[in-house]
Length: 503
Image (tube, rainbow, N blue to C red):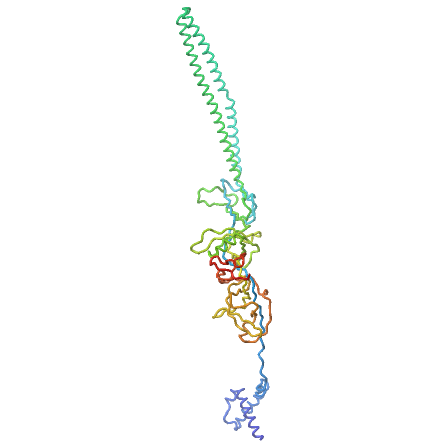
């Protein structure tokens, strides 16, 4: 009996030694354990195997009798699907522009003498900006004043002229002389008839009458000329006054152009011409020389081009005051809400888009012209859409799926049709009912049919700023309802689809 036990122990030690120290056994005469050398190798290997078994658990009997370990039930976080009206937000690209932009140019030629602003600073309307050397223009104003005074003196002299009165007096004197000569002529005629005077005396009297008549005619013509000259001199003097006044006004305007003021409130740019340089007006239509430009930054204009299929919706909402918000640099939200002010009357044929303009308050001047932005436009709502966190949706080859937990805490799969994304929530058009528990955390730890433990979370915990990923067009959804439209009214004028939202 002891021999059998010893043989069994030797066999077990041999097996353990072979498993633990195969290199050592391989070098021993494994088929000759009865030889002294073989027994030495076997005894050495057996001793080492015994120690190794004690340290590393080579005890097969104890391992075989250990109880199997149970798989723990995984814990997942679930959220109940909720039915709610979800805004439809579109994010067309936009470009900011200044509603008012003014370029300051020199209108007179001269040397730039003064600069009254800091480049890049804000300026107010009617604020003094630049001054051109004024002295030459002040001299021109003084000269124009002198010419005006001279013209006014000439007018006064013309008005005080007595040439007309002198000519009139001469005519009166000549007419009196003519009357006397006629009386003398009649008297001589009577004397000749009575033979009291000679014919020669009568002829002389008659000649005097003709001479006086001619003198009256000549002086009358002189009187008419004097009257005409008087009027002409008055008109000429008045014209010179008008010309002098115009020259004085022009000189004053040129002097005023030496001082350049801001016509608007805004931010001023870089001064293109440095102090002391000669500046002047443009010499041709192609001359774009400017001194400085001013941009109105508040409010800020935004140009966007949404797809033309949104035109009926935008036109309808424009009458109610369509609001817009801006996202700068992709996701940074501008804190102020603007409104659409203009929708163009033509569609761009190459891109099938329509130009829309908006104005957005910019009191902090954080937006500058020429900046690319995302324009957030609320065009309506999904009426009674089922929403879940976007983390719950798993994309698979057969479509979008979500993992649900039923009343027995078992996992099941539902194939759903996502419609849109809003603030981290996915709007589900079909495949999911309100109130179902959807797994949002631990999706990778479970499989369909598996029993799980659940921790329920609130849906609001998973909301976040909108994603910019491409989504389906809302006008194709029967849930779509234009913002402000009555329930049951046509939701999508472009496709004439009726609303199917809750009443």
